[in-house]
Image (cartoon, rainbow, N blue to C red; front, top):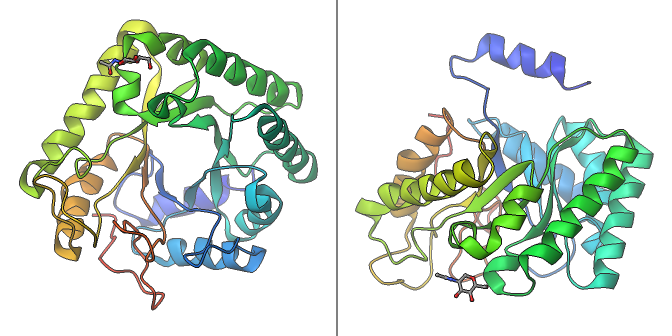
Length: 289
Ligand SMILES: *[C@@H]1O[C@H](CO)[C@@H](O)[C@H](O)[C@H]1NC(C)=O
């Protein structure tokens, strides 16, 4: 409960609502491929917190890879950051290591640092598993953390196209929350139509979830627009378009949905979605609107 006084203080001084999570996806690897150290996790969390939007919610993709939780949880606690934790589901050995890393982090640090837990990421989109197998893994992880007294929501992250596919309803039923990833860029959408395309994807997922498991919340776990890289259909990466997409999508989203922007830093990738460039500065203006 150590975060409550801080959130209350922020709500008292800021004019906008803090009812929805404003998060950012942070990879465990640096742009050169090395694993982040604890100091580099701390730097990342402090930089996100220092942005005008005051980002203290972060999604991490895995628990054991790069020793993510062993290094990121102390950094999160010291900076007042909370984590949407990923637990990788593939393959069996890896899944076991992921569960063990989550269990170890809870044993060492309690659970105040946990925003929520996502079992798997885009597994259905990749066709790497089937809905029933994944649903069982979600029940498995929920059972493990509930036995440790952890009450935070346990769900799954996948592309909006996977959520609206009727073969995957077992996963919706298994989730406490539904994390949807939507990228108008990958849909080849011109920037002028990008916000409409994005909200269409979110609402399509909401409609399916409301039919299958009424009342469950849909979270936006990834969206963003590339600052550089190849065109994709009518979608053109540029800093100006990333800024336009932020103003059009993030500003509206903060008032109505939990959202995790993609991504913190990936300047060696193409397309590159990262908001921090190689000079360490934010590439565009991420104010809270
Ligand atoms: C739905 O998912 C199934 C199983 O992965 C796949 O075979 C099928 O093509 C998908 N349907 C659509 C419309 O994408």
